[in-house]
Picture 1: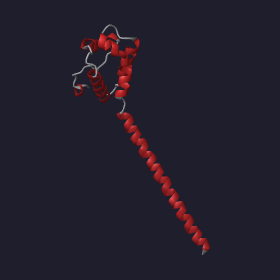
Picture 2: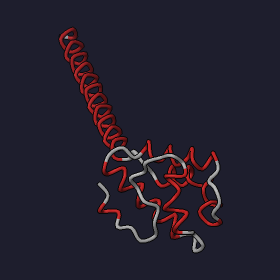
Picture 3: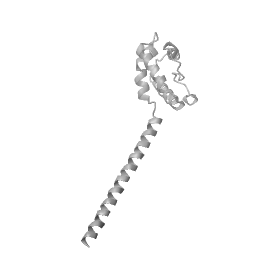
Picture 4: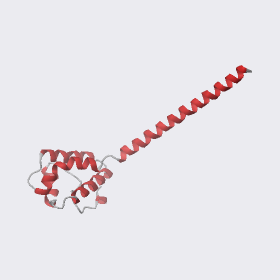
Length: 134
């Protein structure tokens, strides 16, 4: 009888262990799925756009020629914004950044992509409706 009791307790411990392991596996799979979805949705952040466009502030507010660092940032932002959603996000980030600088020169902003040799499908403008970006 003691043997059966020990066997029963052992089976209960094994079943609890299996249940815990299974729960941990399910939790890990869910976390990976959520992380993958967030990574897909979060391809472009305003922090990234701002960091890459910071070297352009003097050009955008004073005119002249954009620096090599500025053009590098423009190219990086262009490379990050591959999908329509990413371009819309980048557009909203650029619009917000443009609105932080009252002395931003609109003509310099419009000329920036071509001066950097980039075909940027995202205008740098205070007034753009970013929902129209495709």
